[in-house]
Image (cartoon, rainbow, N blue to C red):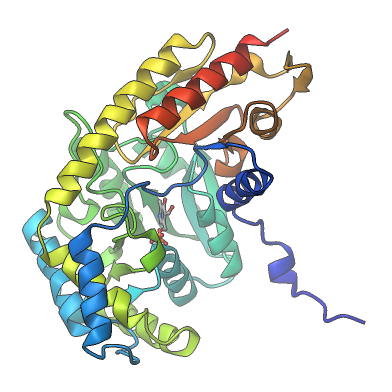
Length: 399
Ligand SMILES: Cc1ncc(COP(=O)(O)O)c(C=O)c1O
Protein backbone atom coordinates (compact mmCIF):
# COMPACT_ATOMS: atom_id res chain seq x y z
CA UNK A 1 0.00 0.00 0.00
CA UNK A 2 1.48 3.34 -1.02
CA UNK A 3 0.17 6.84 -0.55
CA UNK A 4 -1.80 7.88 -3.64
CA UNK A 5 -0.48 10.84 -5.59
CA UNK A 6 -2.92 13.76 -5.72
CA UNK A 7 -4.89 14.17 -8.95
CA UNK A 8 -3.44 17.59 -9.53
CA UNK A 9 0.17 16.41 -9.31
CA UNK A 10 -0.58 13.28 -11.34
CA UNK A 11 -1.57 15.58 -14.17
CA UNK A 12 1.67 17.56 -13.98
CA UNK A 13 4.16 17.33 -16.87
CA UNK A 14 7.78 17.40 -15.68
CA UNK A 15 9.89 20.26 -17.05
CA UNK A 16 11.07 19.10 -20.49
CA UNK A 17 14.11 21.36 -20.43
CA UNK A 18 15.27 19.94 -17.10
CA UNK A 19 14.46 16.41 -18.35
CA UNK A 20 16.61 16.84 -21.48
CA UNK A 21 19.37 18.33 -19.42
CA UNK A 22 19.15 15.34 -17.02
CA UNK A 23 19.47 12.95 -20.01
CA UNK A 24 22.51 14.87 -21.19
CA UNK A 25 24.03 14.64 -17.70
CA UNK A 26 23.38 10.89 -17.64
CA UNK A 27 25.27 10.46 -20.94
CA UNK A 28 28.09 12.56 -19.51
CA UNK A 29 28.24 10.34 -16.43
CA UNK A 30 28.88 7.42 -18.81
CA UNK A 31 31.97 9.24 -20.07
CA UNK A 32 30.42 10.74 -23.25
CA UNK A 33 31.12 14.32 -24.29
CA UNK A 34 27.76 16.04 -24.64
CA UNK A 35 27.17 19.38 -26.38
CA UNK A 36 24.44 20.67 -24.13
CA UNK A 37 22.21 23.36 -25.65
CA UNK A 38 19.17 22.26 -23.68
CA UNK A 39 19.10 24.46 -20.63
CA UNK A 40 18.30 28.14 -20.32
CA UNK A 41 21.23 29.07 -18.18
CA UNK A 42 24.10 31.49 -18.86
CA UNK A 43 27.37 29.54 -19.01
CA UNK A 44 29.21 32.41 -17.28
CA UNK A 45 30.04 32.26 -13.60
CA UNK A 46 28.33 34.81 -11.39
CA UNK A 47 30.45 38.02 -11.46
CA UNK A 48 33.00 38.16 -8.64
CA UNK A 49 31.66 41.26 -6.87
CA UNK A 50 28.26 39.55 -6.54
CA UNK A 51 29.84 36.38 -5.10
CA UNK A 52 31.85 38.57 -2.72
CA UNK A 53 28.64 40.20 -1.51
CA UNK A 54 27.26 36.72 -0.76
CA UNK A 55 30.39 35.84 1.22
CA UNK A 56 30.28 39.16 3.06
CA UNK A 57 26.62 38.54 3.97
CA UNK A 58 27.56 35.19 5.49
CA UNK A 59 30.48 36.66 7.39
CA UNK A 60 28.30 39.49 8.71
CA UNK A 61 25.79 37.03 10.11
CA UNK A 62 23.02 37.60 7.56
CA UNK A 63 22.21 33.94 7.81
CA UNK A 64 18.82 34.15 9.48
CA UNK A 65 15.21 34.36 8.37
CA UNK A 66 14.36 37.63 6.65
CA UNK A 67 11.01 39.31 6.03
CA UNK A 68 9.02 36.74 4.04
CA UNK A 69 8.66 39.05 1.03
CA UNK A 70 12.35 40.03 0.99
CA UNK A 71 14.85 42.36 2.66
CA UNK A 72 13.91 46.08 2.46
CA UNK A 73 17.29 47.00 0.87
CA UNK A 74 16.64 44.66 -2.06
CA UNK A 75 13.06 45.86 -2.47
CA UNK A 76 14.35 49.44 -2.58
CA UNK A 77 16.96 48.47 -5.19
CA UNK A 78 14.28 46.83 -7.34
CA UNK A 79 12.11 49.95 -7.08
CA UNK A 80 15.14 52.07 -8.12
CA UNK A 81 15.86 49.78 -11.08
CA UNK A 82 12.34 50.23 -12.47
CA UNK A 83 12.49 53.97 -11.91
CA UNK A 84 15.89 54.35 -13.61
CA UNK A 85 15.44 51.84 -16.40
CA UNK A 86 11.78 52.31 -17.31
CA UNK A 87 10.59 55.44 -15.45
CA UNK A 88 8.07 53.30 -13.59
CA UNK A 89 7.23 54.36 -10.05
CA UNK A 90 6.58 51.58 -7.52
CA UNK A 91 6.58 51.50 -3.73
CA UNK A 92 8.66 48.87 -1.90
CA UNK A 93 5.35 47.45 -0.61
CA UNK A 94 4.57 46.45 -4.22
CA UNK A 95 7.64 44.20 -4.43
CA UNK A 96 7.76 40.52 -3.43
CA UNK A 97 11.12 38.77 -3.67
CA UNK A 98 10.88 35.01 -4.19
CA UNK A 99 12.99 31.92 -4.76
CA UNK A 100 13.49 32.59 -8.46
CA UNK A 101 11.06 33.96 -11.04
CA UNK A 102 9.46 30.53 -11.37
CA UNK A 103 8.40 30.78 -7.76
CA UNK A 104 7.14 34.33 -8.41
CA UNK A 105 4.90 32.93 -11.16
CA UNK A 106 3.57 30.25 -8.81
CA UNK A 107 2.78 32.94 -6.22
CA UNK A 108 0.92 35.02 -8.80
CA UNK A 109 -1.24 32.15 -10.04
CA UNK A 110 -2.08 30.89 -6.56
CA UNK A 111 -2.91 34.36 -5.35
CA UNK A 112 -5.03 35.54 -8.27
CA UNK A 113 -6.62 32.54 -10.02
CA UNK A 114 -9.74 30.56 -9.18
CA UNK A 115 -10.68 27.19 -10.68
CA UNK A 116 -11.75 27.53 -14.32
CA UNK A 117 -10.39 31.04 -14.77
CA UNK A 118 -8.72 31.21 -18.16
CA UNK A 119 -5.19 32.47 -18.77
CA UNK A 120 -4.24 33.25 -22.37
CA UNK A 121 -0.73 32.08 -23.19
CA UNK A 122 0.71 32.75 -26.66
CA UNK A 123 2.56 29.69 -28.01
CA UNK A 124 5.36 28.79 -28.26
CA UNK A 125 5.54 29.43 -24.53
CA UNK A 126 8.04 28.75 -21.78
CA UNK A 127 7.56 25.16 -20.56
CA UNK A 128 6.44 25.96 -17.02
CA UNK A 129 3.64 28.41 -17.77
CA UNK A 130 0.86 26.00 -18.68
CA UNK A 131 1.77 23.58 -15.89
CA UNK A 132 1.89 26.27 -13.22
CA UNK A 133 -1.49 27.63 -14.33
CA UNK A 134 -2.98 24.10 -14.22
CA UNK A 135 -1.53 23.53 -10.74
CA UNK A 136 -3.57 26.48 -9.50
CA UNK A 137 -6.74 24.88 -10.92
CA UNK A 138 -7.14 27.44 -13.70
CA UNK A 139 -7.13 26.77 -17.44
CA UNK A 140 -4.27 27.70 -19.78
CA UNK A 141 -5.68 28.80 -23.14
CA UNK A 142 -2.93 28.34 -25.68
CA UNK A 143 -2.89 30.79 -28.55
CA UNK A 144 -0.70 29.61 -31.46
CA UNK A 145 1.44 32.14 -33.31
CA UNK A 146 3.23 31.82 -36.68
CA UNK A 147 6.91 31.71 -37.58
CA UNK A 148 6.08 33.96 -40.55
CA UNK A 149 4.97 36.63 -38.04
CA UNK A 150 8.06 36.18 -35.88
CA UNK A 151 5.90 34.23 -33.41
CA UNK A 152 4.16 37.40 -32.31
CA UNK A 153 0.60 37.34 -31.01
CA UNK A 154 -1.48 39.89 -32.89
CA UNK A 155 -4.02 42.02 -31.05
CA UNK A 156 -6.74 40.58 -33.32
CA UNK A 157 -5.97 36.97 -32.37
CA UNK A 158 -5.71 37.94 -28.74
CA UNK A 159 -9.15 39.55 -28.81
CA UNK A 160 -10.66 36.52 -30.53
CA UNK A 161 -9.36 34.20 -27.79
CA UNK A 162 -11.03 36.17 -24.98
CA UNK A 163 -14.09 34.57 -23.35
CA UNK A 164 -16.13 35.60 -20.29
CA UNK A 165 -13.82 33.36 -18.25
CA UNK A 166 -10.60 35.04 -19.37
CA UNK A 167 -8.82 36.62 -16.44
CA UNK A 168 -5.35 37.36 -17.68
CA UNK A 169 -2.78 37.31 -20.44
CA UNK A 170 0.68 35.89 -19.83
CA UNK A 171 3.16 37.71 -22.02
CA UNK A 172 6.81 36.71 -22.14
CA UNK A 173 8.84 39.52 -23.68
CA UNK A 174 11.61 38.91 -24.81
CA UNK A 175 10.37 35.42 -25.43
CA UNK A 176 11.70 32.11 -24.30
CA UNK A 177 11.79 30.01 -26.54
CA UNK A 178 11.62 32.16 -29.72
CA UNK A 179 13.67 35.27 -28.90
CA UNK A 180 10.80 37.45 -30.14
CA UNK A 181 10.73 41.02 -28.83
CA UNK A 182 7.50 43.06 -29.12
CA UNK A 183 7.87 46.69 -30.15
CA UNK A 184 6.06 49.64 -28.59
CA UNK A 185 3.30 49.73 -31.22
CA UNK A 186 2.54 46.02 -30.88
CA UNK A 187 2.39 46.32 -27.11
CA UNK A 188 0.05 49.31 -27.32
CA UNK A 189 -2.32 47.30 -29.53
CA UNK A 190 -2.32 44.47 -26.99
CA UNK A 191 -2.71 46.92 -24.09
CA UNK A 192 -5.77 48.51 -25.71
CA UNK A 193 -7.52 45.13 -25.71
CA UNK A 194 -6.44 44.48 -22.13
CA UNK A 195 -8.01 47.76 -21.05
CA UNK A 196 -11.12 47.36 -23.20
CA UNK A 197 -11.79 43.85 -21.88
CA UNK A 198 -10.80 44.63 -18.30
CA UNK A 199 -8.09 41.94 -18.10
CA UNK A 200 -4.83 41.55 -16.19
CA UNK A 201 -1.38 40.90 -17.57
CA UNK A 202 1.54 38.93 -16.24
CA UNK A 203 4.54 40.50 -17.97
CA UNK A 204 7.46 38.08 -17.70
CA UNK A 205 10.39 40.37 -18.45
CA UNK A 206 13.22 38.19 -17.16
CA UNK A 207 15.20 38.69 -20.39
CA UNK A 208 14.78 42.50 -20.39
CA UNK A 209 18.55 43.12 -20.58
CA UNK A 210 19.22 40.55 -23.31
CA UNK A 211 18.12 42.28 -26.50
CA UNK A 212 20.15 42.39 -29.73
CA UNK A 213 20.92 44.77 -32.57
CA UNK A 214 18.42 47.53 -33.19
CA UNK A 215 15.69 45.83 -31.13
CA UNK A 216 14.59 47.74 -28.04
CA UNK A 217 12.96 46.29 -24.96
CA UNK A 218 9.80 48.06 -23.79
CA UNK A 219 8.41 47.20 -20.36
CA UNK A 220 4.69 46.44 -20.70
CA UNK A 221 3.24 48.79 -18.04
CA UNK A 222 4.95 51.78 -19.69
CA UNK A 223 3.07 51.61 -22.98
CA UNK A 224 -0.09 53.40 -21.86
CA UNK A 225 -1.64 54.76 -18.71
CA UNK A 226 -3.86 52.53 -16.62
CA UNK A 227 -1.71 49.46 -17.19
CA UNK A 228 0.43 49.49 -14.08
CA UNK A 229 -2.52 48.64 -11.84
CA UNK A 230 -3.48 45.68 -14.02
CA UNK A 231 0.00 44.29 -14.67
CA UNK A 232 2.22 42.07 -12.56
CA UNK A 233 5.81 42.32 -13.75
CA UNK A 234 8.05 39.30 -13.21
CA UNK A 235 11.83 39.57 -13.29
CA UNK A 236 14.91 38.32 -11.47
CA UNK A 237 18.67 38.03 -11.45
CA UNK A 238 19.01 34.52 -12.93
CA UNK A 239 19.58 35.44 -16.58
CA UNK A 240 20.95 39.00 -16.49
CA UNK A 241 23.61 38.30 -13.87
CA UNK A 242 24.27 34.57 -14.44
CA UNK A 243 22.73 33.77 -11.05
CA UNK A 244 20.43 30.81 -11.80
CA UNK A 245 21.56 28.85 -8.74
CA UNK A 246 21.06 31.71 -6.29
CA UNK A 247 17.27 31.59 -6.80
CA UNK A 248 16.14 35.19 -6.64
CA UNK A 249 13.20 36.52 -8.62
CA UNK A 250 10.55 39.14 -7.90
CA UNK A 251 7.21 40.61 -8.78
CA UNK A 252 5.98 44.19 -9.02
CA UNK A 253 2.25 44.28 -8.58
CA UNK A 254 -0.62 46.27 -7.09
CA UNK A 255 -0.11 46.53 -3.34
CA UNK A 256 -3.05 44.32 -2.29
CA UNK A 257 -1.76 41.47 -4.47
CA UNK A 258 1.81 41.92 -3.20
CA UNK A 259 0.55 41.72 0.37
CA UNK A 260 -1.30 38.47 -0.29
CA UNK A 261 1.61 36.96 -2.23
CA UNK A 262 3.91 37.79 0.69
CA UNK A 263 1.49 36.03 3.05
CA UNK A 264 1.29 32.99 0.76
CA UNK A 265 5.07 32.86 0.63
CA UNK A 266 5.31 33.20 4.42
CA UNK A 267 3.30 29.98 4.72
CA UNK A 268 4.97 28.08 1.89
CA UNK A 269 8.69 28.85 1.92
CA UNK A 270 9.23 31.69 4.40
CA UNK A 271 11.77 33.98 2.75
CA UNK A 272 14.16 33.55 -0.19
CA UNK A 273 17.70 32.70 0.98
CA UNK A 274 19.16 35.57 3.00
CA UNK A 275 22.62 35.27 1.43
CA UNK A 276 21.18 35.18 -2.09
CA UNK A 277 19.19 38.32 -1.40
CA UNK A 278 22.35 40.22 -0.43
CA UNK A 279 24.07 38.92 -3.57
CA UNK A 280 21.09 40.07 -5.68
CA UNK A 281 21.31 43.48 -3.99
CA UNK A 282 24.95 43.73 -5.08
CA UNK A 283 23.96 42.67 -8.59
CA UNK A 284 21.40 45.48 -8.92
CA UNK A 285 23.36 48.21 -7.16
CA UNK A 286 26.93 47.32 -8.23
CA UNK A 287 28.77 47.94 -11.51
CA UNK A 288 26.79 46.92 -14.59
CA UNK A 289 29.67 46.37 -17.02
CA UNK A 290 29.39 42.60 -16.39
CA UNK A 291 25.94 42.74 -18.01
CA UNK A 292 27.32 44.56 -21.06
CA UNK A 293 30.17 42.04 -21.36
CA UNK A 294 27.80 39.07 -21.24
CA UNK A 295 25.52 40.76 -23.76
CA UNK A 296 28.49 41.19 -26.13
CA UNK A 297 29.30 37.51 -25.87
CA UNK A 298 25.63 36.53 -26.41
CA UNK A 299 25.47 38.83 -29.44
CA UNK A 300 28.48 37.12 -31.06
CA UNK A 301 26.98 33.70 -30.39
CA UNK A 302 23.56 34.72 -31.66
CA UNK A 303 25.08 35.99 -34.92
CA UNK A 304 27.11 32.79 -35.27
CA UNK A 305 24.05 30.57 -34.66
CA UNK A 306 21.93 32.54 -37.16
CA UNK A 307 24.65 32.00 -39.78
CA UNK A 308 24.91 28.27 -39.07
CA UNK A 309 21.12 27.73 -39.23
CA UNK A 310 20.96 29.60 -42.55
CA UNK A 311 23.68 27.30 -43.94
CA UNK A 312 22.02 24.02 -42.93
CA UNK A 313 19.73 22.68 -45.61
CA UNK A 314 16.06 22.77 -44.63
CA UNK A 315 16.41 24.51 -41.25
CA UNK A 316 14.95 27.98 -40.75
CA UNK A 317 14.50 30.32 -37.81
CA UNK A 318 12.96 33.72 -37.26
CA UNK A 319 15.08 36.64 -36.05
CA UNK A 320 16.53 36.11 -32.60
CA UNK A 321 15.83 39.57 -31.20
CA UNK A 322 16.30 38.79 -27.52
CA UNK A 323 16.92 36.11 -24.83
CA UNK A 324 19.45 33.38 -25.74
CA UNK A 325 17.61 30.77 -27.74
CA UNK A 326 17.16 29.77 -31.34
CA UNK A 327 13.83 28.10 -32.14
CA UNK A 328 14.44 26.39 -35.46
CA UNK A 329 12.04 24.78 -37.89
CA UNK A 330 12.68 21.07 -38.58
CA UNK A 331 9.47 20.35 -40.50
CA UNK A 332 11.39 19.36 -43.62
CA UNK A 333 12.80 16.38 -41.74
CA UNK A 334 9.60 15.05 -40.21
CA UNK A 335 8.59 11.75 -41.79
CA UNK A 336 12.20 11.24 -42.96
CA UNK A 337 14.91 8.86 -41.78
CA UNK A 338 17.88 10.44 -39.98
CA UNK A 339 20.84 8.20 -39.13
CA UNK A 340 18.68 5.18 -39.96
CA UNK A 341 15.79 6.16 -37.63
CA UNK A 342 12.44 7.53 -38.81
CA UNK A 343 11.63 10.90 -37.25
CA UNK A 344 7.96 11.81 -36.88
CA UNK A 345 8.08 14.61 -34.33
CA UNK A 346 10.36 17.05 -32.55
CA UNK A 347 10.76 14.79 -29.52
CA UNK A 348 12.16 11.98 -31.68
CA UNK A 349 14.36 14.50 -33.49
CA UNK A 350 15.87 15.69 -30.19
CA UNK A 351 16.28 12.21 -28.72
CA UNK A 352 18.03 10.93 -31.86
CA UNK A 353 20.18 14.04 -32.08
CA UNK A 354 21.25 13.39 -28.50
CA UNK A 355 21.78 9.65 -28.94
CA UNK A 356 23.49 9.76 -32.34
CA UNK A 357 25.37 13.05 -32.11
CA UNK A 358 25.45 13.88 -28.38
CA UNK A 359 23.83 17.28 -28.90
CA UNK A 360 21.17 18.13 -26.31
CA UNK A 361 18.30 20.41 -27.40
CA UNK A 362 14.59 20.62 -26.44
CA UNK A 363 11.63 19.58 -28.58
CA UNK A 364 9.24 22.27 -29.74
CA UNK A 365 6.27 20.22 -28.51
CA UNK A 366 7.34 21.01 -24.92
CA UNK A 367 6.76 24.68 -25.76
CA UNK A 368 3.37 23.97 -27.36
CA UNK A 369 4.74 24.12 -30.93
CA UNK A 370 5.43 20.90 -32.86
CA UNK A 371 7.86 20.96 -35.78
CA UNK A 372 10.52 23.05 -34.03
CA UNK A 373 13.51 22.57 -31.77
CA UNK A 374 14.93 24.98 -29.20
CA UNK A 375 18.67 25.32 -28.76
CA UNK A 376 20.19 27.65 -26.20
CA UNK A 377 23.17 29.70 -27.30
CA UNK A 378 24.24 30.33 -23.71
CA UNK A 379 27.29 28.19 -24.48
CA UNK A 380 30.81 28.99 -25.69
CA UNK A 381 31.49 29.47 -29.42
CA UNK A 382 33.63 26.30 -29.47
CA UNK A 383 30.69 24.25 -28.13
CA UNK A 384 28.27 25.93 -30.54
CA UNK A 385 30.57 25.22 -33.46
CA UNK A 386 30.86 21.52 -32.64
CA UNK A 387 27.14 21.24 -31.85
CA UNK A 388 26.08 22.83 -35.15
CA UNK A 389 28.60 20.72 -37.10
CA UNK A 390 26.89 17.71 -35.57
CA UNK A 391 23.36 19.02 -36.19
CA UNK A 392 24.41 19.53 -39.81
CA UNK A 393 25.75 15.95 -40.06
CA UNK A 394 22.57 14.65 -38.45
CA UNK A 395 20.20 16.29 -40.95
CA UNK A 396 22.55 15.46 -43.84
CA UNK A 397 22.11 11.78 -42.97
CA UNK A 398 18.50 12.18 -44.21
CA UNK A 399 16.98 9.54 -46.48
C1 LIG B 1 10.66 33.08 -19.44
C2 LIG B 1 11.17 32.61 -18.13
N1 LIG B 1 10.56 33.00 -17.02
C3 LIG B 1 10.99 32.61 -15.81
C4 LIG B 1 12.07 31.77 -15.69
C5 LIG B 1 12.48 31.33 -14.31
O1 LIG B 1 13.64 31.92 -13.87
P1 LIG B 1 14.25 31.62 -12.44
O2 LIG B 1 15.50 30.84 -12.66
O3 LIG B 1 14.52 32.95 -11.83
O4 LIG B 1 13.25 30.84 -11.67
C6 LIG B 1 12.73 31.32 -16.82
C7 LIG B 1 13.87 30.37 -16.71
O5 LIG B 1 14.21 29.66 -17.62
C8 LIG B 1 12.29 31.77 -18.08
O6 LIG B 1 12.90 31.40 -19.21
